[in-house]
Amino acid sequence: MAGTYSYKIEPRDIDVTRRVRVSTMGELILQAANDDADNLGFGVRDLNLSNASWVLSRLAIEMRRLPQRHEQIDIYTWVSDYGRLVTTRNMTVSDASGAEIGAVVTQWAMIDLETRRPRDLSALSSKGTSLVDREPPIERPAKVGSCSGEERPYEVVYSDIDFNGHVGSMKYVEWMIDTLPVETLSSAENFRLDINYLHEAKLGEKLVICQGEEMALRGRYHFDIRNGDISMCRAKVEMGR
Image (cartoon, rainbow, N blue to C red; front, side, top):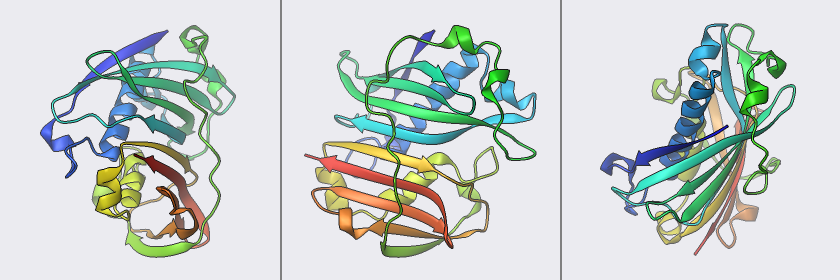
């Protein structure tokens, strides 16, 4: 089974470039994933009944362009496979004319909210009927290595924490985007973003946001958000004109 979900880009969603923020685009992607999982019977509300929840493990987004204020977009999403610990959900993003302007591959794990450990996905009795025999629309999220470069300290605050009690997925994106020059963001017409979520970051933790200088060529940047020697989130982004 697959579903299509429509969203309108509101004035609050755009930045100085008059296009939707990268992090907000990510939030709409996560919203579509949640809406479809709810409709299939294994959304967060359903999992919470058994003290479980979904957490994002890896994410890849390719956007040919970012939609502008008042645009309506349609996100078509489907689940292509399940493993014992990870499931793959895919998406395409289209504008009001039907033109495809983006594609997404997400990989999710289910965690026990008490132990914070992964749960076996075989417990999802409805998973077999939810699968769609269609390959991911882009390459799956790449494994991102560590980096060295400019480091900025950051302490996790209340507004960073989501309903799972840890830093929300798109907060990491906001932190990373905030390190980039406005000129780079304004001139970029397309991008690919790969993110690996590795450990939970909690309220009050003191982190370091590292931007890898070695990849800051031709619009390519590499990030590693760490607590001491432990990487919480790693990412790379390539922006084009």
